[in-house]
Image (cartoon, rainbow over all chains, first blue to last red; front, side, top):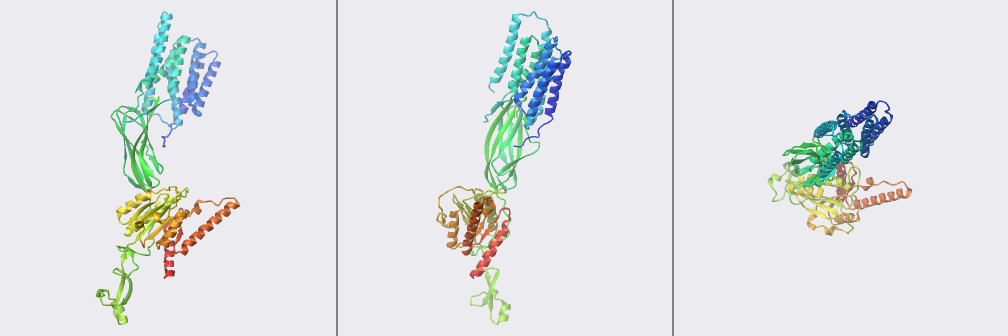
Amino acid sequence: MIRARPLLAVGPAALALAAALALVPPLRAGGSPGPIAGLGGAAVALYAISLGAPLAGAMPWALGLLGLEYLVSLEVRAAPLDEAAPAYAAAFFLCAELGWLGLEARRGGRPWPGRAAAIGAVALGGAALGALLLAISAVSFAGGPVLTGLGVAAAVAVAASLAWLGRRPA
Amino acid sequence: MTTWTTTASRRLPAYLALGGAGLLAGLLLGRPEPVVLAAPLLLAAAAGLALARPPDVDVTVRLDRERALEGEEVELEVTVSARRPVAWLDVEVRLPPGLAERRRSGDGPASLRAGATRTYRRRLACQRWGGRLVGHVTMRARDPLGLFTYRDETRQLLPLRVYPRPEAVRRMLRPAETQAFAGNEVSRLKGDGIEFADIRPFEPGDRVRRINWRASARRGQLHVNEMRPERNSDVVIFLDTFTDLPAPGGTSLEMTVRAAAALVDGYLRRRDRVGLVGFGGTLRWLRPAMGERQLYRLVDALIDTQVVVSYAWKGLEVIPSRTLPPKSLVVAFTPLLDERSLGALLDLRARGYDLSVIELSPLAFVRPGRRETERLAYRLWAMEREALRGRFLSMGVPVVTWRHGEPLEPALAVASRFRRDARMVRT
């Protein structure tokens, strides 16, 4: 089979973005960034192994560690609402996509313009959705079991919608 | 009707798992940031699932021609018409052995709009002669986010006949006997023709224009010129297809077919009648005939030549008698390995056929071995072969060894020289 020339620059770009994302939480943590930086370092190392090996199975774990680092940093510094979260989420999604593209590039695949546009659109849409969620969460509601139940119902509805989308006939 | 096989990317379960973990973390921590972090992942998964539809396409396969010479390239066109948009579609052609794909730059995967048609062109290099069926196409498509891969195979098989590129042969073996029809071969018999043969004293009934006045004046008696007519001959190409000896540059059967194609072409150009006998596991024959139609028949028969293993004993009696006309020249291509073909060739000579053997020596395909016993066995085998050649030579049959990588013409020249010298000895 004749393959297209692989786009080998994707891998380093993805790794640079992952490293930048891993640097953000320790820098913002201030006082004791050690454990957070450790989590970030582990995430980047796993990400690099996944790209270099290549080992597709390690990619979700690297992304999970990266997300965990961000959440731990929020908890450690007991931050109020993080207004940069939508931007971080968009960058996190781009990092994930670049990682998968890097893995595909190792197998000779190339991204196509339509896919790049779709990824960009999803990243922007995700950031907008995140901003909307943040805005909604900034509004002070009187909490309680009803609101928590609504939240759980929303999460279940999201999962059910995804399951329905996955099972529907073509 | 296409049936697509759908494969989900590993990204989809990863995104769903990470997104689900984000939602759960949001609930447990009572913070919106985990949900915000999960939002693009879940959005991508939702968009991917919503857009996931197998392509709806029509595929047409076309070859620019049905016949090609070995070494030439043919173009295969795969035209895909999309009824609904396809984000990414690539076409791969699965080729039978002997053909190689040369993909042009810029003819890779592409997206198709609804109603759009795209033609994927592939150059197919014909590396080996033979009859083949081309048109086994594998299509791979992906959705806009690349979360799903769709695969389908379609078979619109088109025949492609690749003819062997003949060996360059200018001088053919000249038959000992000619037939009755006009041709390019100067007959050994005397008669009406344009080739001078001899002079003889004038006899009543001789034409006046045949009188050789100069010889008559010198000898004081009328002499006439005798001429040789130009006749055609019957040539039968005998292919020993019991064994095929593999080599990196091509098997003995490939050599045989190329050489046979050259001889067929050469003899038919001389207006000889040419026939074919494929003597092997399966017996195949074509009666001698002349003309362009016979050339195509013979070449078509040649490219279908293959080795079929058989242990059944075969002799000349299985060959139809009209396939081997009397006085025909039989040119045999054989590795002189199978007892059945050896017996048939010796029988042909015993029946008076004008036989020449082009030996595709198996010695080039076999190594002597390292151990003393192996080398001894090899030497014994080589001596046996030498004795076999001697047996043929003693019967007046030239046995010429044609080795892999060498041109055929020198081998034919050696055979011609032997035939000429043997004839002189006989006369």
